[in-house]
Image (tube, rainbow, N blue to C red; front, side, top):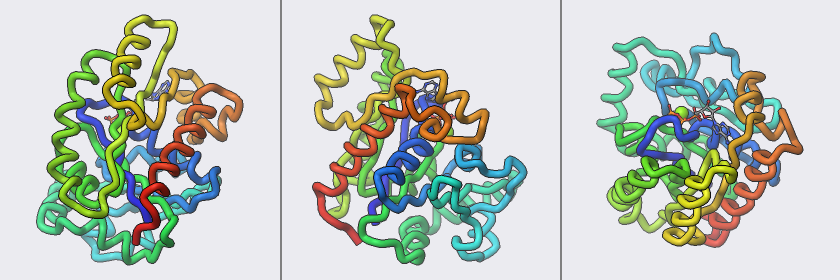
Length: 257
Ligand SMILES: Nc1ncnc2c1ncn2[C@@H]1O[C@H](COP(=O)(O)OP(=O)(O)OP(=O)(O)O)[C@@H](O)[C@H]1O
Ligand SMILES: [Mg+2]
């Protein structure tokens, strides 16, 4: 099992969209994929045809002492989806307190699922430092930092690298951190310039460049991944290329337990 934490300092950069479409693309590449929503927005399952009224999820299951196997569902494209679940404010705070007191909550629950050595877990998180980001980074083999090609996002990258340093680097099973530049519009000079600067700064750590593509937003409106909604569009090709780079980064390290 390899765990990828999808993180960003800024909100709205595309973490949930990247989590959903990268999971689908990795599945297309033949991998078994489990995706975990660690964001109280509980939006990830909507990318997989989840029922908007669905309330089951890992937060409720944890508070009720239930097994994760009872809250997940398999998407039409074969990705296993663990929603956060719908909780009221008191339960959300109780769940976050539970996470604070159980730093290995994510790793322990995933281990109990008996996934294979090549299976991939992709974890979505809310923006910025939080107990959710800490939980995801503390279990991750790969930290995937999502950023937009603009100055505001670029300015947050040292902070994100600092968080990775704090929560991931001391662990021997941590592979590396990598970047996905999302919503690249090459008709814009600034996007081209910032992407070029990021390439110079981070080189091979940039494992994905996802172009801005209307099909991405439309796919969510149809509760689908962009790969299913528009197989020929630019973003679909970008996600497939990203999945291959991510799989290569994971396999270069060898199977992990
Ligand atoms: N490549 C893309 N092209 C066009 N629109 C995109 C692309 N990627 C993401 N979006 C849009 O950007 C918006 C924000 O995406 P998303 O919700 O995934 O961000 P997020 O980082 O998860 O947000 P939050 O920080 O609130 O969790 C959505 O409307 C999504 O459809
Ligand atoms: Mg999100």
